Each structure stands twice: as structure tokens, then as C-alpha cells.
Length: 193
Image (cartoon, rainbow, N blue to C red; front, side, top):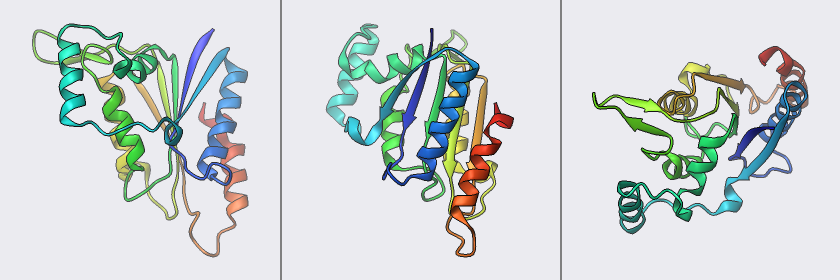
């Protein structure tokens, strides 16, 4: 069975439009392929930003190529996924800080990528695709969403060649019908697989 990693950076999940669209996407993906889904709810994980102490410990273990330590659990989980869905709202031109902290926790040479003798990086991940699902209050092109750009660049570094943005706009425009926007986005998901 293939592994699908759902990196959930949504807050207020009970009412999160990003979360609702992502759940529908995952249901569709499970219809198309035999995925075992692991949902990682970032706000429940209480992932901490790197400090001098944790960074130095991680570096020491990495040099020894001892990647069995608990500090590497998120990176090892990401590496083994066959598909990744990242769900996050669009905040401050990018994404919430918890997703950046998660990215710091997984971006480890020797697990997600390595450096060749030439100094060029090459990816080590199994995943073929990342779906980046985000909702935005205004009208922002995917190519101007710094969160998506960051994930797309990192995905390539990790060896994942296909990174698709499912960005849904216009939620904070007063005259827009939010329920209609969500329904339209969900109805359009099959066209985005």
C-alpha cells in the first residue's frame, strides 16, 4: 500500500476552508490509488523551532549518519511518503510559522537530499508529487504566493518533480459567497489530479 502524508498546517480546523478542501482532495486521491493516509496536525505536534542546542545535536548525529534519533522522525516520515498533501492558509504572503518550523525539522541533508561530489544537491524522497492546498482572502496568483514558491523549490531539492498548487482565492471579499467558492473548488478537484 502506498503512503500519503497529509501535512496539516490549518488552524481552526472545524471551520477551515483549506482543511475541508484538502480532506476532499485526499478522498479523491484514495479513490484513484491505494493510499494509507497519515495526517500530521502540526499545531498538535508542538514542533519547536531549532535552537543552538537542537541544531548542534542534529548536526552531530547527521555527521555520524545516525538518523534513528527522535529528532529525525518528521524527516524520515516525509522521505518515505509516496505522495504529500500540504494544507495551509495563505498568511502574510506565505504560510503560518508552524509550517516553516516543520520544514526546518525535515530539511536534513542525508535524509531528504544529499550533496554530490560536484557540490550539487540531489533528492532522496520517494514521493512523486506534492499537492499544496491553500486558500487566500484576496486574489493572488500561485506564482506570487511565497508559500507555494518555497514548497515548490524545496520539493525539487528533495527530488520530487511534480508540485501542484491548488490555490483558491477570494474568501475575504465581502460580496463573495464563501460557500459557493468552496463548493466550486471541491467540484473542480477531479480536474486537478
